[in-house]
Length: 376
Image (cartoon, rainbow, N blue to C red):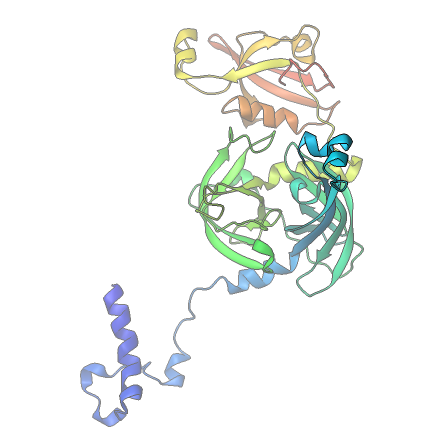
């Protein structure tokens, strides 16, 4: 098939290159598309992501950050007597830093831009540059290190926001497009597929439920958009696995479901008000499932219930296996942690669980539990 396509191109081009007139062309070389503009107009257009890119890119911005960070030095250099003895000048305690990242407009009316916390967490000044060249000084609305999400507000009009997709419906193999500002080059578009969903345990962030993609993501893409082929925002590009420092085809994005819930709280309250239900949890491994006589592996095993906690008051007990929260399946302990961690203090959640051979549901009110021993 590849050889046939190349041959077709050469057949169309060779007569013009060699100066062969149409009348002298052999019958086998005649083709209706050979340098015939009218025939070419009838050929179906080539597949292209260009229409999608034109639709999406006005909503993706460049984020330039100026800030200061502490300068690390040897304890000897911080000793005034040591510096005096060796006639050394005073060492600066801070230094100016500049960084570049990406962001996505999520509210065109109010000028809200979503990006990564690690892009803006040390910022004294944030400059947002739109695709049309306009630049604005942004005001930091709030940040959430736990999910690495931040929201910045800009005083701009005539903005374009990306519609939100449903990241819960993503499947491995779905095509995606990443848009951002890698290496400060300017807006760049790459494409790929969803390589995996629900990635956790990477110890990149506190709350992990990453979309993994092979679309090229590099330094500077942080905070940029991951969109589906409908032009819907389904993730915020956040991190890469880069043994050599560059893209190796393993990038991670925060699912838009998680990012949007966090952004809503940042806009409303300036921070995320996370609560807990008062349980310590662990994964249900095949060994644990066998020892407990469970018919399947999965869910989050309650290893301990904090006395007097919301979980205790609701009747949850040690040994219960949580299978769903608000109707969404819980695959493992990270899933449960993510589900509950996105719920504000004071709100209620419905928890489905297995106890032995029976299944039941309880409603638990999420509370503010400062006890560090309580995992959720």
